[in-house]
Amino acid sequence: MKPGLTGWAQVKTKYGESESDSLRKLQYDLFYIKHRSLFLDVRIIVKTLSTIIFFKGQ
Image 1: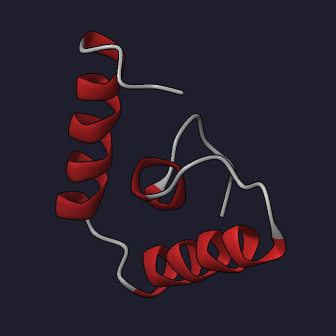
Image 2 (image 1 turned 180 degrees about the vertical axis):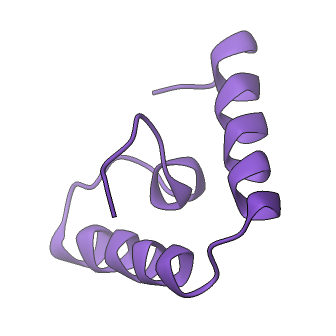
């Protein structure tokens, strides 16, 4: 998989501050790889745009 600007792990979790946060992000990345679809990509784009528009980023 080529890296992108955003991903399922980025829109589902906070910034990784501990090993358990990193493990959770890895689990989300593996979920994305197993369940890749246009619908999931659209959900990621929508969540990313809503974060940008409504200043929900950290």
